[in-house]
Amino acid sequence: MTREYPERPIAGVGAVILDGNRVLLVERGQAPLKGEWSLPGGALELGETLEEGIRREVLEETGLVVEPLAVVEVLDRIARDAEGRVQYHYVLVDFLCRVTGGDLACATDAADVRWATLADLAAVAPFTVAVIQKAFEMAQSQR
Image 1: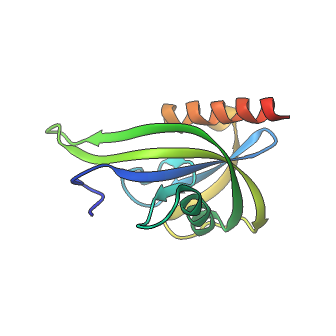
Image 2 (image 1 turned 180 degrees about the vertical axis):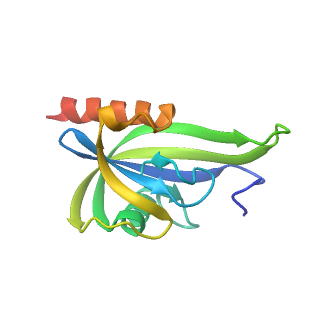
């Protein structure tokens, strides 16, 4: 199935990886968010569970091994073209994750990777900032 102008929504996963007061961000290297800072993640592969998908995507994009701890949010990401046609439609499941291994390095379709504080999120999409804030609240309540 093509990602651009798909016949149906595509299931995807995102990882909210926290380190103290910081969150891990990747700069997208491909459409639809090319050049934008976002959470590590991507589309599920056929036969892959949500947790397998998030582990694979994070490893591919960041070099880190993670353990998914809890679902933070489930949301639609729909982008329409100038004529109003659906150009991209993802149903995303974002997980709070903790790092269990690996070495941080930019890889595959990520153009860059970095740790950011909440004050550094001005260039991040508002829906992503809301997910990150919710994950920080979840993490604090688990302490």
